[in-house]
Length: 167
Length: 365
Image (cartoon, rainbow over all chains, first blue to last red; front, top):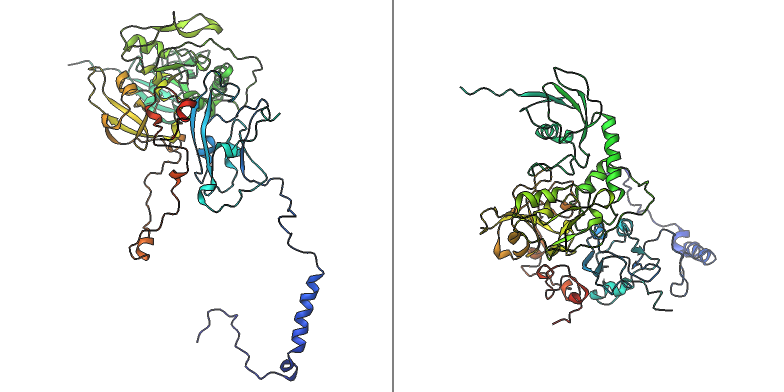
């Protein structure tokens, strides 16, 4: 039979020597390797108690930012949605009414803002595209969920707490 | 025998073109097309008397004519300067012109607010394109931009005076298309503003065309205000038999699914309206049943409007159903059961004017 590569090796079918028949040297060599690793530095961390540090450029779960006065910064310009390669972001805009100036920074705001975390690939393009510094990616990841509907993040899930209201 | 018309030979950026006497340099350049066409913010070929205000179409005349070959001493506005026989014009080949245009863009942007994220014109704005192609990256202006008292122009047209660049196109439109012009430019200098003399509604049959001629977002459609961004909508050509004899009924519908968010006139490659449309077509016919849809409109591939619109795609055959012996795959999650966006009971395109918080906070029926 012609071999596909020149790396093929024929199987060695010669009978085992006495040392090989004893098996014990091979077992002790293997155990030695195992024991050696017990005293080495561990490659894993005990996750819930101990957390690994994120890199400074880590891109995690999105947040919608507010300004110093607690007004929503997002003006529903749609640049994050058009920049999103996974088409995870959708929104609907509304006009600010008189009397809502303490809620929304601009004349127009996002009445609905949704990120589908099932689609999101955490590329950070939305954060980059945002002209109003409204979308940021935080240093947490989207928590696991038993159902798919838990991954549709609306405005109430994304907005940071109002600094004015909590005082 | 009719006397043969003498054609003038003009050289624009070393491209020779023959045009009739009386043609402006801008129109001669438009005959060539491509990159040599100077941008124009105020000139509008369908409006008589327009042009000469924004100065973005400045070009350098390097040779006046065959008879008088001296160059013109200053840069000239190409929309107002007629050609002479043997004239030689430099547009993009002259660094002086490009530099002057950069300055003009800076002047136009001095008082223009940076509210593109809010503005409905963003994505199809002439000033946005102009500053992107010819302007500087940053502003050097450190003072307060001018602001105005809000003027209400009625239920169809929204005026944002801060965005206006005073091109006068809307004034010419109202003069030449409608029976009675009700708005104009009041005051002068830095204070000049578009306004009706005493608060008056603009309510004339063809007044909606001021929205289309406006090169910036100063005049926008109130019925489509904040409803959607232009690049999320799909433009389709459509027509209807309009009762108005002056209206052609040929429009572009800006649709999403079966909803019509906005109706505009068709614009040609220079951003000018091909045919004027009446206000009934523009503001009142927001139902697919009113229109005969001709097909998707051809949008320049480099325009943001073509973003996310996939044309001529070939969808590969999905072998899953075949593998499953004809069974359809089980749908594990329907996004519409959870998503709050695009709720069928909130028909955004049917709301008069912009949506407000109470439109969204309707209890789910």
